[in-house]
Length: 193
Image (cartoon, rainbow, N blue to C red):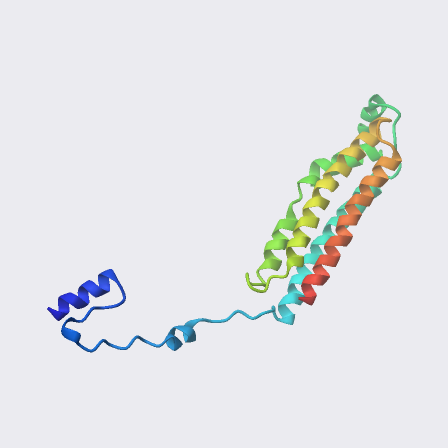
């Protein structure tokens, strides 16, 4: 009978009803369960924060290099209309042809490597100690990536028409750089913990 009561107690609840006022076993102390819990550190180690910083800043530098390479190819080469721009694309020495070749082979607007950098940096933290700045970095790099794509499309338009001015291109460049600077600041904040 006691075996049946114990079985039913295990199946239907943690407290076993013992018949006839029998002595109930003491409940295990929570100390054993607590000793099995591994506490996450409140902050990541300095080495982990430094490693994450290195990954994040390398990604920012990569995109800064892309933008500067794009700008070096474009220069201030401009054609008054789309027809002349198309003719220039046939001349391999022209900025239009070099930029078209670069876009075809490199596709900077399709470069999503910042997501890989975020995943690598994120592995240095836990859910308990991940700095908010890491999420800020991802947001800023996402905005930067969108703006880099916008800059690229404006640069194509700039070369072959008059609808995009140098001021338009410069403003788009400034926006990309703005988010790169913010991402650098986020990386530094993540490093500080």
